[in-house]
Length: 161
Length: 221
Image (cartoon, rainbow over all chains, first blue to last red):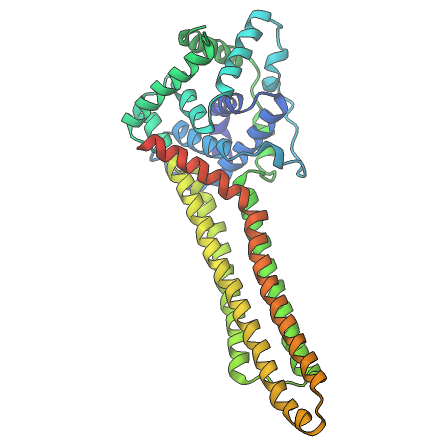
């Protein structure tokens, strides 16, 4: 079971990285949240019965972990350092324009609430309304309305005048 | 910058991530064996701490009974002992089964539920624990109060001869005041324990979850 889990996670780990990049601005936070999500995924894995797609199930666990994640609370536990380059995105190939764009992206998203972040991530990932609805547990209509409101909110941030 | 740019930036970031080395299976394997620090993990730990505190408080209660029986020479009636020990066992078993259920069921299903449902379930578990815990602390208070009131009653009967014979009202006064202090201490300890556990161990989690619940319910309206 463990090997099957690790293979599945390895294949879909981009999902965790994307959730981390939406919820955390700095590398340390991303690493910690990555670890948290992974631990939760492993603990919840016995409950995965294959009713939903593995990626949908992963999004659920990742969002449930991320929205209840308190960054300030976790200093007394040992965390495993992740050596891979995945967390060094901003240091790789210093493209100033790219960095600026990414910083702007993070700034815009960071103004959203935890739940709005999860919805906008799914929207940016071009997920269909029915899948967003299945992950979030709200109706497709609610998803549509919420996305529209988030778009308005982001427009105001991006074009303050 | 327009929303389309936001999407393009996101795509650019995703493409860049695709080119970067992923976390290896070996590293993933190492990570899954570490301890979590999320709300789930923290609340799980807090529930265990709360349970241990109740057990410690019951031990304190038994110590008080022991003190009353052996040092103050007040005989506790059988019904009081049954209430005391019965409640202790009942509360401990009830809380232990709660901790077991939470460990075995809730924490495995809550994280993989739909986000709205997960928040609701999480709040439900906490509220249920709060009720169970209140019942436990209230029982503790009740048995403590019964023991104290009974010891005061016994002492008045015992001391009636002293008052009649010796007029030792000061002794009686000290005894009553001591009993009242014990009762008040037990009451405040029980109350403090309850308030402390829920404010310190669960307060911020409850607040955060209630905020999230309110937000997602607003979306769903």
